[in-house]
Amino acid sequence: MQDAYIKIWKNAGRYRVTGHSPMTWLITIARNTAIDRLRAQRGDKDLADYEDVLSAPGSTPEQAAIARSEAGRIAECLNTLATDRRAAITGAYLEGRGYADLAEQAGVPLNTMRTWLRRGLIALRECMGQ
Image (cartoon, rainbow, N blue to C red):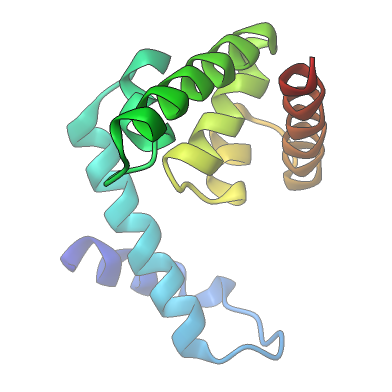
């Protein structure tokens, strides 16, 4: 929590009135700080480590087998993407990271990151359809 307060204090001048409440901005900073902390504790994960996230919990053995198969197909399709696109998709949709955070880490503009994610999802849909 202290990290969030420090970030809010240091970045208070960056807050802009956009129609959202100031509380939304504060909660976003706190959420992103918590995610950063969890990510730092977890370290780097291989795509195989996401199987528990990709498969449905509490399913029957048949459903679990189908879900594992689908998770394997998704992992294969993710491996067909460029490394930076794959990292963006896994970061956004499997780790819950924000687009701005991903763009900053990749060193690209926010709209470029959005384009990478959109095109990556389209490529995944096409791969899964085969």
